[in-house]
Amino acid sequence: MAVNGQGTEPVMDPLERATAVARETEPSGWAVIADDVMRRARQLRRQDDPILADVRPDGSRTVVSSRVVVDLLRTDLTQDASYAPDDLTLTVTGERLDTVGVALVAAFGVDLVTMADDVRARVLAVLEGLLPRLADAREQVSVDVAVVDVVDGDPRRV
Image (cartoon, rainbow, N blue to C red; front, side):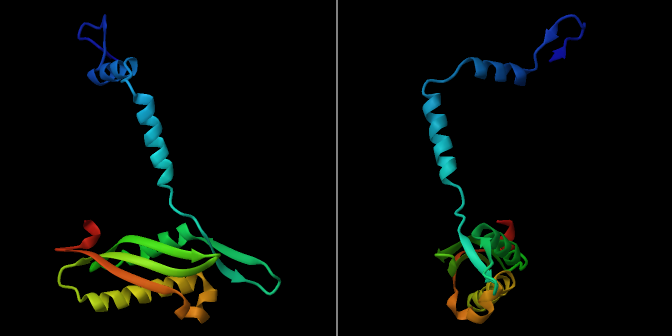
């Protein structure tokens, strides 16, 4: 709250006044809208599947969250200025990673086939570092690359 020039009467800031009025008057149907927004926000939760990374001779297991895999892939795939990941999807059956889907935005003029090969190699390198048991089963994980947009300039800035 601010004080007027003479210092005797409090003057309410316009933003505070608008906030107070908004809190006093609740629009009709607000509860229904708020509930709908919260329900939809809860549905946006990213899928979190466990992926088996390692099994030790003593039977102990290491499991990695699919969210960790997606975050590491996204970080790795934003290092090159000729493409940027638009969407990353994992298909997990049981606790086994079957498919990695990569939707890319590419820079104009890039050889798309060469770029897709580079992306596949980068994805497999990240997976092999994170999921050592995949080193022997490289061909078992399919990496599907789709170019969804081509832009002029650095696609990481789009």
